[in-house]
Length: 138
Image (cartoon, rainbow, N blue to C red):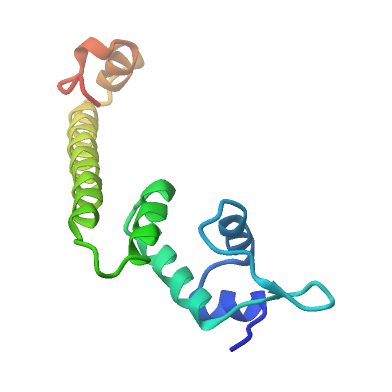
């Protein structure tokens, strides 16, 4: 199979500039070029780009994706490292959820302002003094 970058983009739902970026940073191999210097992609590139896209959708950072892709090159190895990478990402997501929950709670508390005057506004008060926040970790 030989695909143009546009065809690869359509098949994988990854924008052309993103494909070029992934090539630049080494997540996607430099493609074969025609005599006219047009990029041509193979079935392996489609599979790899789908892997990258899905990993990005799940929030994995580029370095983690690079590690995961490297590990796919050794199919007989234990998947312990894959689990470690995924557990670390899960911990980051869990932490982010906790911070967002605290942020939501703080905003909900702030909007209890009774709409009198700006000088009495709880929202302005809290924005001016972080110490008045219920959740200092946000």
